[in-house]
Length: 199
View 1: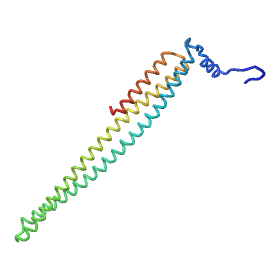
View 2: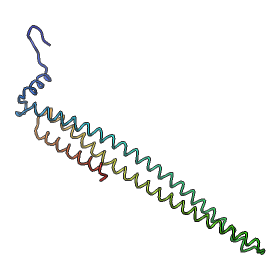
View 3: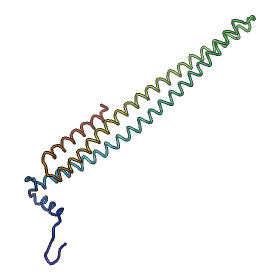
View 4: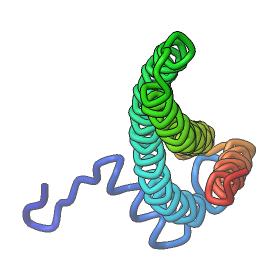
């Protein structure tokens, strides 16, 4: 690199020197200021993008978990309806036995069973309806989380495009690419805000 006062600059060293001195770059404007501005903006956007990416993964995991909870509640509700059907069958048999019985004591005994089955069916129906309502609620929560996941994914994608535009802007020193980078960053942040607000 250097020896006896002789020093060789690499391209990267040359650009850094210009940035420190505030010298003009290839595009005929303040290249050092542009480099610093884009570097700072890219670091911020990359950090925010990482957070948005994490949120996207978390909401996707939640959506799967909630959908699983909904399936469990639907299965439990189905079991309750099967139980309800079994009680209805027993009640029907007890009603037939009562109607065909000739002894008053047997009729009373069967009527007691019928009343008990009717009461149990009411309790089972309440439980099944409650489980179905819970399954619907879990499904709704899963759908909300999936929608939010898509928003986070959209935001992360736009922020990645923004970072790519930043790299191209640094290489080409084109001012319009820098503006496109800022626009993409703003759109990505706006979509991320929509995700945070469940929109």
